[in-house]
Amino acid sequence: MKPVGPIPAGYEELDGELAIGGKTASALVAEAGRTPLFVYSRALLDARVAALRAALPQRVGLNYAVKANPHPLVIAHMAPLVDGFDIASSGELAMCAAAGIDPQRISFAGPGKRDDELEAAIAAGVTLNCESEGEAARTLAIGQRIGTAPRMAIRVNPSFAMTGSGMKMGGGAKQFGVDAEKVPELARHVIAQGAEWRGLHIFTGSQTLSADAIIEAQGNVLELAAKLTDAIGHGCPKLNMGGGLGIPYFPGDTPVDLPRVGAALAQRIEHLPASLADTELCMELGRYLVGESGVYLTRIIDRKESHGVTFLVTDGGLHHQLAASGNFGTVVRRNYPSAIATRYGARATEEVNIVGCLCTPLDRLADNAAMPRAEVGDLVAVFCAGAYGATASPSAFLGHGPAAEILV
Picture 1 (cartoon, rainbow, N blue to C red):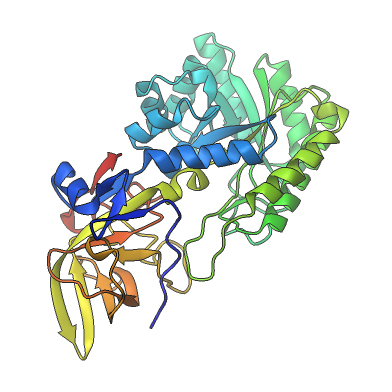
Picture 2: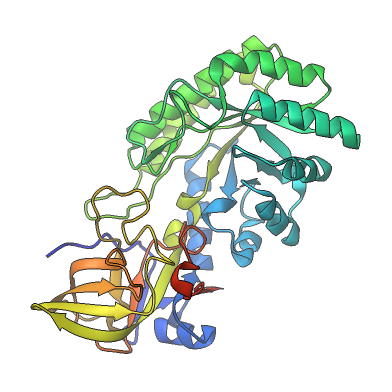
């Protein structure tokens, strides 16, 4: 038997079913009109932001990384809760514009920005986090051509990465950011060319559960930012410190000790060097803000036995939940938090494999998992589906199309 990951706090049972936002899974599917279905909880989004505000120093702002979940209703819900938005494409810029977000609250990072994306961002007044000298040159040239001074920051590729990070974004050769030793000269050039200098973006890694690793990385980031600011010879208007806070997905995972991280950061901020005294500080968070607020609901359409093994075949799968299937960078597949949503209060009585509808053996949602007996028509819930599910999965694969999405 293979255990499943820990179900996040905040979910309830109602009439023997999983309930989200006071509605049962069956009622939510009826409301949406179909499965598969992503359900995002307003209450859990609010609670996560409130917990961060309570734990972090008041001086540290919160930016939402739109790539984690760009659903229009999620973006609109986050707008009054956070201080800024981080985007990675002109498509995400358009989504933020549709939600009425002030472009001056937006920063744009990512390698390979096209000229049309740069022009749209410059014209709107978005801060561009430059990833290379070449991108900076194109940005300055476009700004001159359209008669608008670009708002520019530099994304730094530091010599260090976040220890224990699920995805390292710094240290060594990287497609992300400008190598730290090259930053001062480039920053002075950008300022001399008339750009509005917006500071530094230093992102070291993501999906880290260790408070020690996060505390160490934040200390390194502040130290590097001060050193670079001194070398540049101009103040640092804003420092995007990145994020890196992870959420528990797998058996044995434990949540980040957020109060400990916040206390350590507060102590660091009390002793900031003079060069960062007036710097606006922010953390950029995506998965940590929205990941645990989402549930993926998929209906069982077949129950079969093969060589003594029970398979529950659903109408969902890896085309919506690539990460839960184990095909999004995981070396050894482990079970995400999952349950039979329509038998949420029942005890486990059998061991099953929960699989999707695709013609590939990679399409698995749970292996050898202990579940209450489920029949055709029951609903399966996969938790931690609020980030990198609907848009980071190959929804066009085999023509099954995207899942429905609702915010409750």
